[in-house]
Length: 232
Image 1 (cartoon, rainbow, N blue to C red):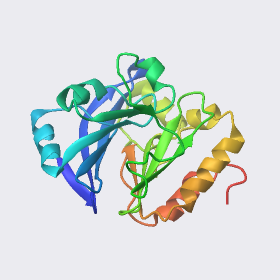
Image 2: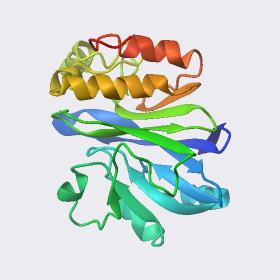
Image 3: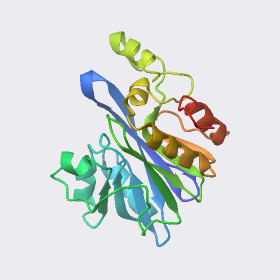
């Protein structure tokens, strides 16, 4: 189930889950091995015995990351399975999931335990969610959760397929859905976040809902955020 994506980084795909209005989405998580054999688990997917054993073979599950207020469904299962792991949440999620004792709220500043290996930026000012975008330096990989999406044509049917097409969710290349573009209220914060992402020496982009980008990642980011005014 787990496949190596680059140096010290692996990804695993899980089953699709239903969201609002009956839309269903594929799920994907990323595991990064930090110095000291600590594992950083981004957007945990449904936990199975097989997945638990595969992750255990990579190192010690130390940090569990909910990167926005939408990707938290399986956090409780992972916390129960790895009680020594430290859970971190995107802004707004601790209030939504008061049943989870998060160790901290993610921000623009990397936690000291992963600074140097992983950088991050918060896309704030969005009415739908605040998303923390991460950059794994050793592999040059950027992690996007919902701000970039690309689902294959035929993934949805009926009126949902029409909505998905209009929302740019089924474009040939991953794009920021129109609903997220409209939901950005703070344009200055958006510009600053995009500038930061584009400053990273990226080699690849992993998104939770769509195919990874492994060729010309920086050119891809230019196209993906060309709609943001004031961003070169």
